[in-house]
Length: 311
Image (cartoon, rainbow, N blue to C red; front, side, top):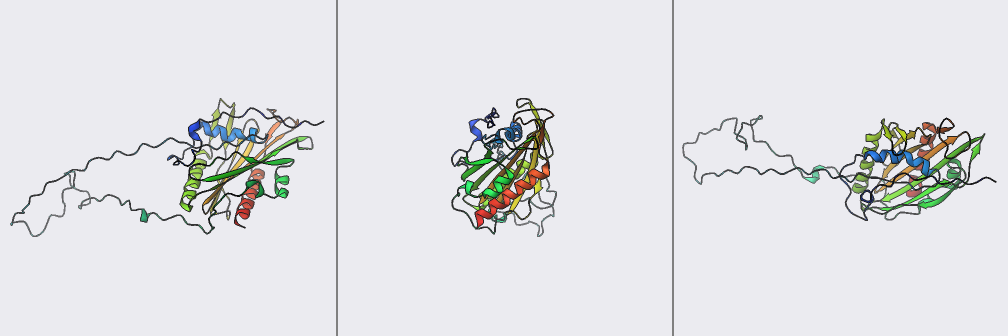
C-alpha cells in the first residue's frame, strides 16, 4: 500500500520580531536579511510536503538623520542711510561662505502634495474572502495533482487583514516512475488604502530585486540557493513581478507578488521531481522543475486570483 509523504524538518523559525505585530508600523528597510534568502528557497522542500509558508521581513530600522542647528543672525534695528542702491551679485550664505549659485540656497520642499498619490482602477476590497475558494479545482488538480487545500497560516499585521490557503499533496503523484511533487500557496492582504498596498508591494519588489541573479550559500540549511531574474506578468493587477528559485537539493519554486488597488497577493508555486520515487531523497535522482513550467503555473494562479477577487 502506498504511504503518504512524511513531513520533513522545517527550516529555522525566524525571531519573533520578524512577524507582523497586529497592526504596528511596517519596517523601514526593504532589503531581505541574509538568512531569509535561505528560508525562501528552502521552504520549497517543506511546502511540497504540507509545511507552512514563512513570510519574512527585515525590521532593522534605518538611523534617522541628525538635525543640525541653523545659525542665527542679529540684524540692527536701524540701517545706515548710505547703503548702495544695488546689492552685489554674490551674497554670503548662512554658513558665511559664498554660495556657488550666487543666491541663498533653499532647502528641498517636503510638501507631501508634491508626491503623487498611488492610484488604481481596481475597486477597493473591505475584507479578505476565503482564499481556498479563489482557485477552481480544475486548476489546482492540474497544477498540484493529488493535492488537498487547507487554510494557511496568515497573521494580520502591519495594518493589513490577511488570509491564505495551501494546496499540498496528500499522496504520491508518480508519472513514468518519477515522483512529481507540486504545491501552491496563495495569500491575500487587504490594506486600508491604495497607498499602503503600494508600499507593501514596493517592499516586496525591492526584496525581489535584491535577491535576483544572486546565489546564497547557507551552511545551516546545507544547500546553495540560486535566484533567477525578475519577470513581469503583464496585465495582471496593477503590477506583478515573479522570480524563480532553486537549490542543489532539487527543490524549486516561483514567487510572484501582485498589487491591485488596496490589495496585495502573494503566490508560491513549488515543484520537485525525483526519479527514484523518494520524497526526501537528495542527489542525482532529485531534480528541480524547469523555470518556464513553474513560471507559467504561477502566472495562471495569479491571473485566476485577480479574476476571482474582482468578479
